[in-house]
Length: 486
Image 1 (spheres, rainbow, N blue to C red):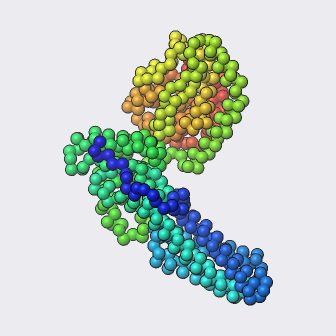
Image 2: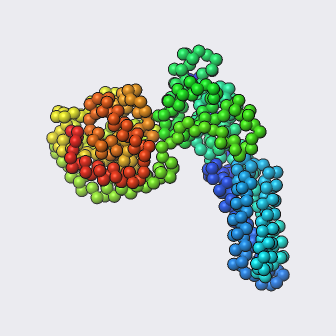
């Protein structure tokens, strides 16, 4: 596909290491602030101890030196934050750093001097120590900022800055004005794929199908390269193309951001660079934050691990019973689509005489002759689903989430039901909100599946840890009255 551009913008060969290849772009300011605090504290203690030891021949009150350094460091960090000195773009400007640091440090020295005068506490921290603290602290901070700027420039030049991994999709003109290095410097994003759409001068009818194929390639690359965001470089006035692309991108559980186009950028050219990022428009946001995902993952691993240990005797007995009941493997696996539409193999105890996993799969029905005698019991009690605890530990599934469908059914229903792709914005679950509301087992028609999807989407939009706990509790109750499980 000639219009597919996969980024290869960074220099090949050996590149010098930078500390910023290990620090996310969004944490550079925090890292610099912590470094400043440590340097101010160290300067206070060093200046006090050295001065008192050389002049007064005693080490001095180290606790006072630590107190002065701590308060000064905290105020200095707050002032630097207020002046915008921790913005990555500002860290690259030597003149801006020198001016800002001198102003903030001068304010700190005035503050320390005023405190000593008002509270008459100069006996513990002499004037000589204060002067030494002023020169030493300023020198250490300026040296640190110079090193930071050089190291940050090196990381930018080598393309090793640890920014968010993004896929970029856009028009030829807009992409030309937004190189991978520009996006890294301006938005802190690390490009892992770039996809160029058809020229806007061609006929609309001839470009739609081609553009959708390009977007599908971008979706595939986002899944393969574990992208964290999608950036759109489109003309803001081309709403029809943007809407079509956004509709397609619903298949990804990622934030989709619209970058300013050429006309908007010209208006914003005189803006303070630290406000420039605010001009992006979030068209789609992920349903769960990183914090939410972490909480859900810890909950899943803890309960799945405990469940496997407690249920191991039942799993062992079930395995023997399946082997004695009918010929075939104990564990049945089938391809399903999970988080972000990635395929994985789901595990179940075998309950049928067939092992279907292809483009045409028939759901189990009442009195289905394919179900074994033991299989009816396992399906009614949902014991056949217990091996999916392994899928949970492997990170492919969650304890609670939309039930994953066979790929054949995914393909069928994604075209028939609006917003079906949103089910893949979270990991699939062993049980889900729809299953506890009576939509368990067979979905005989599109209407039934549509109602299940509505419940799945409600769960995604209203997720909380307490909701997961409620669903697990209700699932245990549902097992006592097996509806539609055959």
